[in-house]
Amino acid sequence: MTGSNFLLDTGGAKFLVDCGLFQGEHSFDDANWMPFPFDPSSISYLINTHAHIDHIGRIPKLVKDGYRGRIISTEATRALAEPMLLDAMELSRKTAEKIGKEPLYDERDIAQAMSQWDTVPYHKEVTLPDGVMLEFFNSGHILGSAMAKFSRGGKSIVFTGDLGGGNSPLLPLCENPKGINYLVMESVYGDKTQADKERSTRLNDLARVIKDTAARNGTLLIPAFSTERTQDILFDIRELFATNAVQHMPVFLDSPLAQKITESYLRYPQYFNAQMQRRVEEGEKLFELPGLRYVHDAMESHDVSSSQGPKIIIAGSGMSNGGRVVAHEAAILPDKNSTVLIVGYQAAGSLGRKIAEGAKKVTIKGKPVPVRAHVETIYSYSAHMDSGQLLEFVEKIGEPLHDIFVTMGEPASSAFLAQRIRDYAGLHATVPAEGGSAVIEL
Image (cartoon, rainbow, N blue to C red; front, side, top):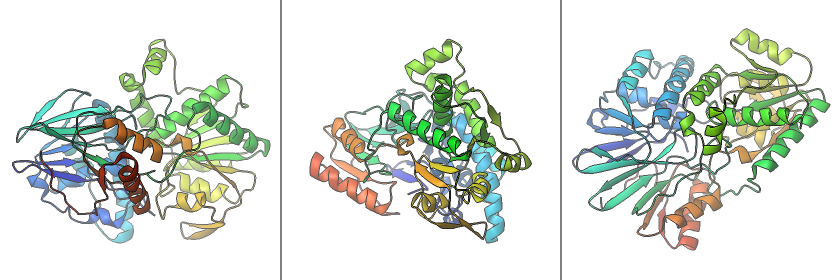
């Protein structure tokens, strides 16, 4: 499900697509310390689709283990990657202490990785070794996210990375590449359909949760990924405040990483959709809202949890498997007047998954915590296509697509999507096993 990492061997060169972190019950799974199943020094190029940690989180380890080739992504992805990796490094140190291992990497490894990192805009063809051409397409997932198309001799393969479902008010829609033969695609929501994807419905749902929690004089806690999810939520709360759809109240952004990512978003407005680009050009501050307070240190974070009156806390991590949100959950989950709002995918075994599935008691830092708070979900914040959209994405590609590899999903999700593709699109779709391989014509 996590730890995205694909190797394309063309005979005369080896191309790696993504090098992500394994995540599950903890931010750092023990599997991250395993050796790579290939020699890092043998890789010609590393192509990165986007800056989520499950796609970039082991890049410094790859460099530490001997990779000295170039790393290629969009400019926005490179800008987002550095703060993401520095944050992951701190989590790596804490995990390493617990399991008795050396940290996965350090600042020098990150600096070395960034020195090897080049950027390419969408739709500019890049010549790679062994006669291979690379082209990026916008995947609409997060700022700067891309699908990677490799072509040679009239044949091509696309690695989708993650595909956005059009739910973000900030980003353009996912593109549909044409004329490709092979597809390696994600399937996070391959067996799920979002009932209503309209943003107006999402805003109404968010307004209802805010108003219900405020009426109880409680705290609304939103575990949110620092990249994309936090920015969408801030933008939506700003819209609700501006239209007086909800009462104004303090909003605490308790994630230093999310603060840095938000700054990066503002530095690259060219990756926004056309409407948001116009609003930025007209001087609008997309993420500024009344009552927004940035929380900088752990002491201040503790004070936020214990402060009285209705409030909103947005904190990382999005799956509650680390970060400041865990301490907030320990304080808020026992409170029947408060609410935890789940707004994205929760990995199997994660604290967020247990809360979302209705656990009456969870364990936080070794202590049992009763769940009396209201638990709400708004999955239309998802940055992923759902099952129907994934099938439609495949159908729109059309000929000469004939082989599809369904990856990056839980087993049931991937299997369900592959079967739907076979049944409805009439195409050959398989679910490769971890470590598996396939031979293609390229």
